Length: 538
Image (cartoon, rainbow, N blue to C red; front, side, top):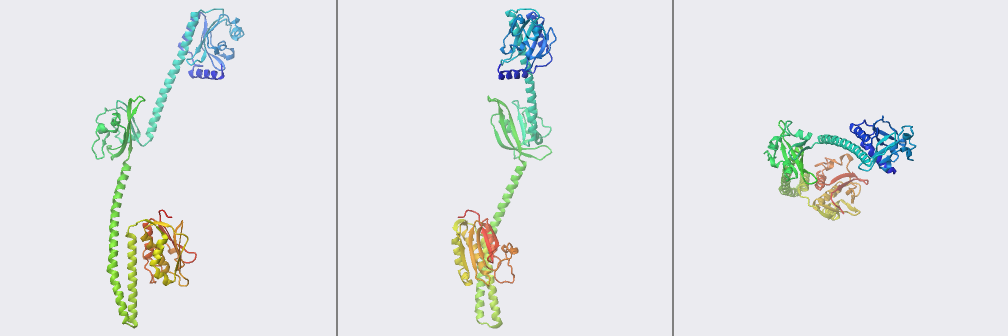
């Protein structure tokens, strides 16, 4: 026998689990019948493993194990055929065996039927023997072979019974394992068989329903028994319950929302997914439904909807407020600026006819009128920066800078200022009107707060960090660089120039574009204002 064949034979022998087991009555009876059929006083049922011969049961003598090398049954085991020796002392394969020589026994007649399994492995033999010569007939040999087959059938029956018991135990263990797993999840799982009997009802399902719900009741008034309601509070019709829909072949059901009203507790909103359970041939084995508690999710959705409604109302109020502010700014422009212009003109005419202290008073009044006019114009620009709709287009920043410089040409020339561009300027995705106003405010600030002892120089540049407008003016202390973007902030309240609105307007413009603006120190003196706008630039 090959090594692999012997390995398979031993594996099958051990699979039957009969080695070293107590004698079974059925096997003892078979061995007794074998001795009677052969007409001998002694017989044995022998199993051969890798090291020894195990005498499972015997007749006519006390059984004992021996080494495989000493066993007569192991001599021709590989052949798997009936062995018939009328006188073993005459056979060269057996005459020196210790069971023949007298060392272990004095066997003369010997016959053995192999125990061949359905898969062709030889486990051992059913053997008969005597101390005198004998010879079996063909009928006796046939009966002994039949008895050997009965022994193997007995082994098979025992193996099948054991496997069936193990399978049943495994099924029970798997069932317990499945129930344990189902009880650990927070989704309610309910299954029914073809007779509508509940076969699974996990912990989450028990938590959703009343503790005394009758799981064994007939499939009538199911909605009432399980307290199932539509979202509008009406009971769910029995034929529309997800499990029933799945069982009737109208499924699967996905995303069906219902309410479960457990007595003594608030209603729970659930989302049901149900489908039929089918065998390979298509037969319906039952149905299963998964109920996910979406009460919290529904509450979140309701709160979000309410928040959206409040936000929409707030946006509407904001639009009305912005419209009112725009209208107010127009009224201010017309109703205040025009009279102030008239007052200023009248003061100039009066000043022509005055002298001494009266002339000084008229001159101070004229300057006050100019400041009030500038303040009104600045407020109007701030209002427009916040209320005008942002209309983004792609526009070269250099074009907007040129337009802003053209608007401030008189102020720039009067101050002897010089505006230069360092490097290429990008194409921005922005509202050109608002960004032009932003650049005009930054340039005007740089000119207005120039240093009295050095020529005013303004540099505009751009890189990955944003657009920078740098000046060499008076500068802003580090602790005030965030505060200057607040409305009406003036670092020197005694100064007559400025209204503290220009940088606030810049912040408002950048915010409306979703960007950022900040002020940094300029190493050449003065400050650098950097702004960044989202969106593609090129």
